[in-house]
Image 1 (tube, rainbow, N blue to C red):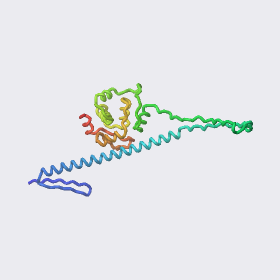
Image 2 (tube, one colour):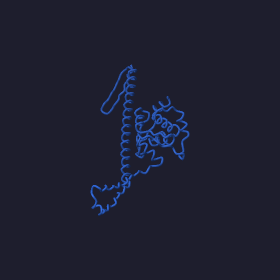
Image 3 (cartoon, rainbow, N blue to C red):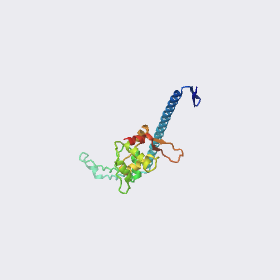
Image 4 (cartoon, one colour):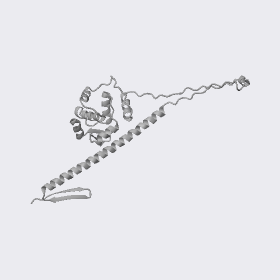
Length: 240
């Protein structure tokens, strides 16, 4: 009679099973593979969440430093000097009840307006850093639109911003042969064509649902997080 067995080692722990029941071996091995895959997936999702949270905090710190630097470079309003009051000696001889109060001249308030940021990159950066602000950007006629992308988007059912995220990620993968992308690249494509911005909350939701995954920067040269559409995210998109 044949005997079937397998042995699994994890650190100092070891699991072995030996039996003549072939079906039992197959069943137990399949169960172990399934549990191991679930554990690996949860661990990967947690790593992506930590990376995204770290990136969000880093971008917030960078934005705050830029604001502080701009405030330091902003010229301070010059103090308004009040004209010296010349006292007329004749007023001393007037009755104090008759004397009218001297009008006080109020200095005109000095207002300092921030120089408006112009340009596509500045608008994109501001919109990503302030996702709660309503987007009022209108694509300039000088910015060349991607007609193929517009035709692709117009033929799909879009209800939420996460739909735009999945559609753009799929377009990058299938039509531009660019499976890896950053959040800024994705927002640049959406903003210059249909004036839509994907904020970090939508990005985190897509990661939590396993629609996209965060890719590790093994070279250390990218400088920002990269993402790609998962097989499950592609299936959800194509099934709709």
